[in-house]
Length: 247
Image (cartoon, rainbow, N blue to C red; front, side, top):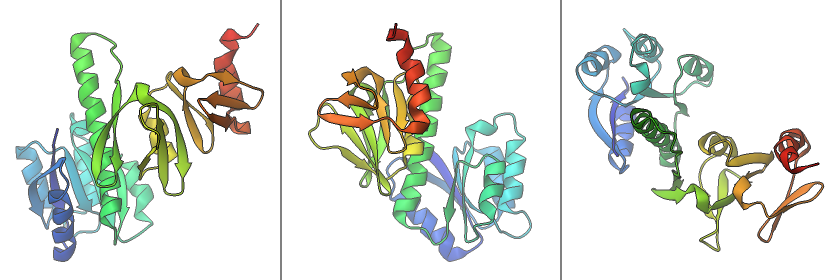
C-alpha cells in the first residue's frame, strides 16, 4: 500500500525538503506540491489525497484554517494531516483539528519517517477494519508494521513477547529472533498500536503479550528468561485481568 500525499508550504526550501523526504520513502507517493493552501484545497476537492504534509503559517489561508475546512467534510477521516512548523505553540492547535502528527522545523528524515510510519499504520488499520466490516466478521488484525532503520518491517502479533522502552526507541522482543527489533517510536505509540486483550502495559517501560506469560509472582511477570516488574501504577489493571484465575 502506498499513501497518496501532497506537500503544502510557502517556503520554497521547506517545500523542496519535504518533497524530497516523501519521494525517498517507499510507502509514500507524492501527487502534488503547493505553495498556497488555497491551491491545495482546489486540488484536494478534485483528487483523492490521503496524507497532507503542511506548514501552519501561510498567507491568505493558513494550514490551520485549511485543516478546519477539511474537518467539516463528511469523509474527513479519509484525509489526514501532518503539520510542520517552526513554532512550538502551534502544537496544541494542531491537535485540536485532529492532526495525525506534528513536526517541529528543522526536522530530520528520521523525524519525518516516524510521523509517516504513524500515518501508514493508521491507514493500514483503517483499511483492515473496512474489510472486516464489509465481511461482517470480527477477525482481528494479526500483524503490524514497525519502522526499523529505514524500512517498514511486518511483525506478526503472535511473535511479540514484550516491548521495552529504550531511550528514544523501543525494543520489540520476538519469539522468532534472539535479538529484539529496535524501532524509532515511543512506548505510548506502541500501546495505541497493539490490540487490547492481547497486550497490556504493566510498567512505565514495558508492554507484555498476555499470551506469552509463563508465570506471575507477587510483583513481576515471567516471559521466557525475562522477569518484568509490575509497576505500582499498573498493578490494579493487571490484577483485575488476573482475577479470573484467582479463587
